[in-house]
Length: 203
Picture 1 (cartoon, rainbow, N blue to C red):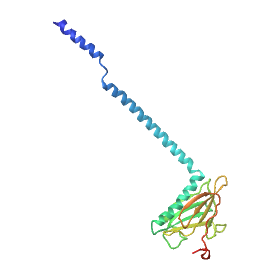
Picture 2: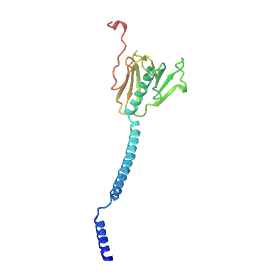
Picture 3: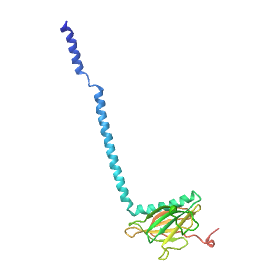
Picture 4: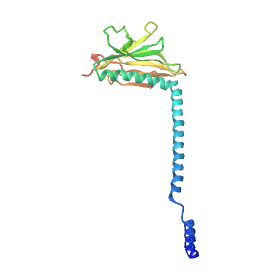
């Protein structure tokens, strides 16, 4: 009886050896592939973040970045004034090559309180302000080395242009339009629109 029982058992062993591998082995290899993909994605993410940070540091030193940052400050002043009943002022200091955005909280405009300052920055080595011309034809000179652009709910008190030079002495103009409240950076020392006199108006 023993030989009869052992034959089927031996056959079962042979069939068991010929069966395909269990699915657990496939899941294990798929899990390893998933881990590899996740690790690669994490490494790529770190590389990308490093590149963005390095690009940001490099970009901060360029003329374009410094000029656009100044334009953003100007646009921030007029936008904030339009959305509230507050008044804002951007002070451009040609001697210090710097600018300041502040909220006007005192009737004495010459008094700049520390708590009123919202942003303060330098133009930088690659971006230099040379002069400011207002649309009433007043401009900065050796005696007037500061320019003041004031914004209220109705818009800019005065329009004009701020002329900047890049590292190659190429001029650019930041044009402040008192009617549209738009502040734009344009290449060259551009002409600005002057307000018309009453006798020049058609209606």
